Length: 204
Ligand SMILES: [Zn+2]
Ligand SMILES: [Zn+2]
Image (cartoon, rainbow, N blue to C red; front, side, top):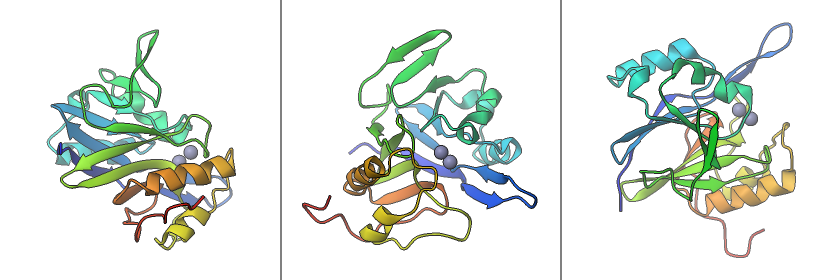
């Protein structure tokens, strides 16, 4: 099995601001595979992201590609820090004014893009082979406000409330498919977790 390297550069968070509004940035994840460095969801916290990258011995120019799980601005804002990187979403690579569709894998890597509609219609997550395990870069397939982390059994994970969900039944199906594959989950906002077990066969 291919062995990518994965590191959570910044753990995602969401907290209410006094007087209204939110303080939020998603989990920003660095994946190194096939000689490429892919940064998933660069988020909003520019200073935190750049210092985490520099702890890896990297600067913005070392990032080859930015993967966006879905087009919520808090997941995207920091693409402005990476002028040289290619931007990809679950469907296309964006090069200047060209949008180029690609297959199931991020080109040049063994990282699989899993369509996970529900939170938004065009949401995608990443399945990353790390040693003998599969890590899921979930994006907002799973997220929660600070302090509200779910239990990690399958039923609790399927039932996790998403107040922003575009299509709750689609979200549940996407979660089920992803939990059937993932050993470790990096949520959009919240701590990395290991689901306890797999969905039982026939569960919908
Ligand atoms: Zn979102
Ligand atoms: Zn989010």
